[in-house]
Image 1 (cartoon, rainbow over the protein chains, first blue to last red):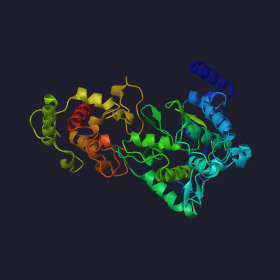
Image 2 (image 1 turned 90 degrees about the vertical axis):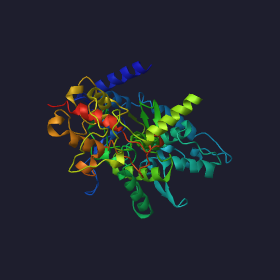
Image 3 (image 1 turned 30 degrees about the vertical axis):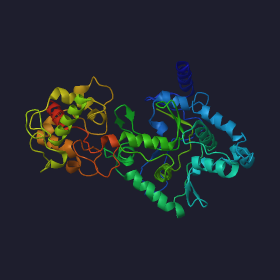
Image 4 (image 1 turned 180 degrees about the vertical axis):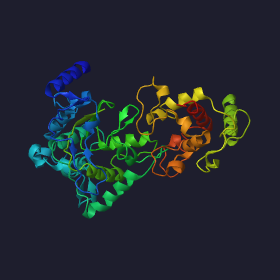
Length: 278
Length: 155
């Protein structure tokens, strides 16, 4: 099954765009650019590049066709859940938000957002669960559960192609700064910060991996290593474990701040969810 | 049960009194003196084993030097890193004592910004995962083995 799917994807990529220097020229489906200029001079990166750019042609090919992209299993699951009534209030997401293609067209590119009610930023997973518990009278979905991954991927996918644009001023400022501090904090037995690899050495090989900029625009992302889709916070955890540090918890304030900051580092890149990575 | 108790006691004693195979006292991580970019003399009091050092050099769970550094001598191993300089001829560029200082704590040689981890230093206040807490990446013996291997990379 996997072999034939791979074969079809490769053939599709070869037909859709030429390979030059090992890279397919065809962009991921729904995406017009994988590289943008930094929005300001004080941005830490000289160019902002999607993780797509750093992956092997066969991995790129899997994302370049929605029928081949395994992440769409979760998009489809999310689409079904969108219309499914759940909880004591007899509501579905669609009861309030109607057609997701319209109501969610930019939301996925703008999270985390400031929540006046909570007095802190809220990300997409948290907003979905807030809707469930506070409006639908339904139980919160567990982080990394099939349901939460499905709904998060479905909602983010509505913003596919929309440039990432997060608020970092006003009440968001201390959270932005907290995320920035975390990004540059060296942790673990290997004593590495995000910046050591993803700012200073992106584009270089580290053993079998090609270091990317660690951009977040493709999340939730289908990782071949995981054989499933996963959240950005799960990826943060994996990185921290690799440097032999004790990871923060998914949904923690630390990862929320880091998410905000990492999203800002990728401002202007179109949302790709669900991306396919190695 | 009795055997396990005895083994435990022996291990505890070994931890209290780190002794190299030849009987010389080992230098503990916090006792290493880096002076003028060098650590003078073996951490174990003995020379390392270059064949073992080569194993730690390529081993993903140990030194994993190859993750960042290319090395023609290990060309048969796939995936050489591009983060640090290639180590071909490293023995011609650094003395043994300089290599030892770089392995122990490269930040004292290359500056705080270097990406290279310290292989014989204990990290504190760094959220180190429990299984690595209070431990160095390589043991003193492994550091000496890697140095013995690096010394063979003359060109």
